[in-house]
Image (cartoon, rainbow, N blue to C red):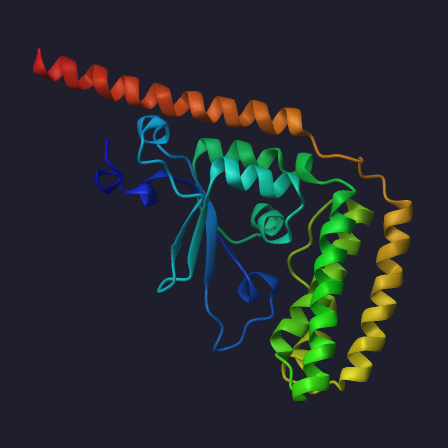
Length: 241
């Protein structure tokens, strides 16, 4: 089966909306960012052609991760992937996709602190350098970094990835519009970091995510893809007979 003969978008098992529309931070100019997961057919997965780790359509703002890649990112507490599992804006889900959602808490661990904190800190350092050198900022990006700190703290405290940020909406929108001085943003960021560290010290999340459960699910999904192809071949042989 050549890659050109298989539309991998037809293999999507889960599609959702993330980004500003999911967070409740959208405006008239906001895009609709769709993300999801696809399960490649077994024959293509085994073939010389291989499969892409993700499908991207820039025109429609869509990105779909191959299932194994998605699971690995989730186990590493990748914020973008974890938010896919908790967004309330789900557009399509198959039975396998539903099973993936039911195990979403298995991906949450103390790694959240390392991943979220490392990314936010590195990005703020880059922005500080950018201000010194250019005097400008991408305020939308600043807003999302602050939102990420708030989200990470809630994950550590409650074992749940919050998506909507209604309580902080006005403050975040003000940052997005560039209405908050950088010094005030930095002061809030430092305060949030202290709260984040405190949440990390007190969290009940496990040291590591449930790799074993994720692996069992992946194997089950792979077997289902094999079963689909065997059934397809059987039906083809039956028609020919």
